[in-house]
Structures are given as C-alpha cells and as structure tokens.
Length: 168
Image (spheres, rainbow, N blue to C red):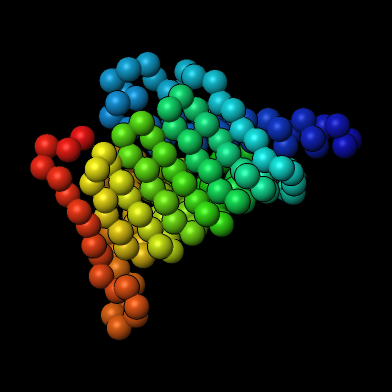
C-alpha cells in the first residue's frame, strides 16, 4: 500500500511537470524542438504526498528543456481524475525561459486557462528590459501580460520599467 502511494506520488509529480512545464514554453521553444518531448527533471529537499496534492519543499525545482520553475515550496494540485489542475509556488519564486524570467514571492499556475499569476515584489525581465510591480498575470497561450502596482496609497504603488529599443 505504501509503495503504491509513493509510486503514484512520483507519477503525479512527473505528470505535473510534463503537463505544467510545456505550457509555459515561449516562442523560441515552439520554433525549435517541442519541449513536451523533452525529459522533465525535478527535485526538492523533501516530498510530501496527500490525496490530490504533492508538495515539494526546500529548493523545489522542475525543469524541462530551457524552462525552469523554482521556489521554496511547489505544491502540485490534481483533480478527481488525477489530472494536474494547478501548481502553487511560494517563497522566492522564479519561472525562467530562454528569453525571459519572472520573479516574485508567490505564483499560481492554472493549467485550465494557461494563466500564471505572480505576486509580491514582481520582476519581469526580457533581455535588458525590466518591469516591476506587485502582481503579474501572464497567459502562456496568448503570450500576453498585465502588471499591476500595489493598491493606491501603498508603498511602491506604481508599475515601473526600463525598456531598451532593439533589445531582445
């Protein structure tokens, strides 16, 4: 029974990484080999299994191709059928592709709508371009982004950025 649960937990982790990471692929990955065909590597200092949930703690990381999702804690949540529904990251969170990186205190990636929401001291970089704010909503399907500042009157309430012409 324990071996079955551990095997299932590892299968869910692998499935989560396989399902979640390819969705965060950028244009460069689409132009080259599909990331979905590449192996997934993951690791953490500890792994905890509960029904419909796998928790990676301590230097938690999942990589596939040139994409990396890293945080202090990664929680992978599946639905009743075992399909991954969302990945929740907390602590110092990074999502890095070959072309851009997102950093924040927390992130929730919803596989259903392809949206990753990064909150808390958010920094988005692409080449030398930098955009900062308190909340980033990035849709991996449409490659659109929205950055919000903190609520009016709060410290650091504005979205700020530096853009360089002809920067990649």
